Image (cartoon, rainbow, N blue to C red; front, side, top):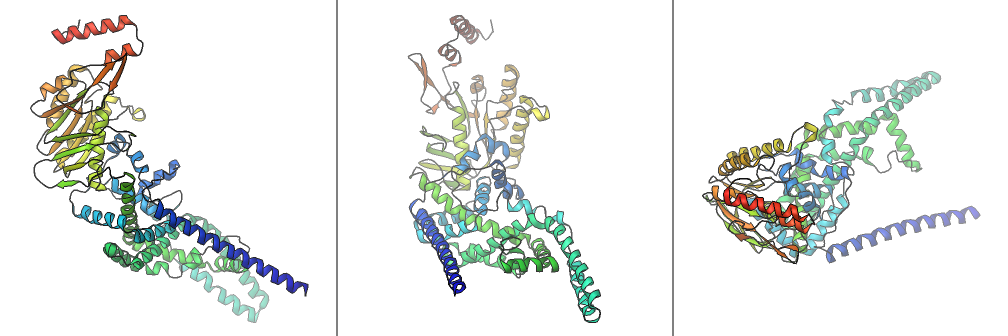
Length: 560
């Protein structure tokens, strides 16, 4: 009787723990749903480990394109920080495709119009948006590495055949027959085959284990694709159809996947059924056989895997862009992008997303812009603001301004360069390579927008001015719009026929320097480098002599 009571109590406790688990899971899902409904537009910056963040770029690296933002331009504009400030995604597919989107400007408005319709739809239709966000949250992450870090190395596994596994399993039959005739010989036969299978099993299992993570995520992609189809939203009908077609191609990949993908596989859980199934796997190589068939299917349908990943990631990217817009509290506009032959660039109250209290500026140009001004007056920040928002216009169809109209551009910059010590290159060598790539791109692009901060700063004044003049003239052709910043005021006169002059200025007041960061027409007429030496406490003799030398040169053109 005591054993029966104990059994009932144990059974009741198991049910209680199970019920508690279901309740906690249900409560967690409800809280997450409330968070999605309540906090849409509140961007929560994530913590990234270096190797984890590096994996976010894998889809982009695997899908190169001529018009994509290159590494120099991406780093010039601190786009990693910009990306982190808008990454409101919940899956590896979402964060990798958002990254890819920011680095892949469109050169026509067809896809951008489709994206815009979806952004607005999900922003105003909370129910469908939340359904998809919950779905992406369940899809989750691949862990430390991208799916593509596994897919790109499938060749390492070589050609894998199941013939040897089938032969080994067939050899059990003679052993069973021998058991009926000579039991001792039959048992020895079976034990030898089992031991050999178990030994070879662990050797192969270690080889395939890293790839099982990628197969598990692919299974999640297929499940997510099925759930997207079940949403039945007209706005994502084309994406749902794509997901259906590509998932269908991977049907054989999924069949029988339990032997490889079950949660109890080699878990050491102590569950009798899991232990029994683990021995079945070891003795008959059931999961190794299934892995090889799944590997064969992935290799045959890698393009379908690619499309599943991209399409799901694209839908989450659209929702993330909507969240980013909402976080801007209306301080953005939808760009007007022009296909006219003549270059167009006009914007009002443009600002930078990483500046807490930005000064907004407006500009309307049809030819190159030459920026002059004092140190720290805002030249570089303005160049980055224009470049970044042009990328935004052609990638996420969102510009941080009151209005924006521009051509479709290829975009390139040379701004925050440094010595390449690992290759023994000086700053000047790094700089001329970076500018040469802009000239090469300008020769290919139908329309090119480029940014150069302090042209050839790594060499002497005479050669810098001479070479800068010719380089910037080359970047003033009808298909190129160049924004350049310089301290060499001589360039403003030398390039007056090709470039419009703009400047930033400062005010010295009460022994300190103040910048208003407002863009003004014309070239700079003030200098502050020597004044800043005085403000920082340099000896009066240094300041006075420096001023005298500068004034003498300005009057005579000769250094005293």
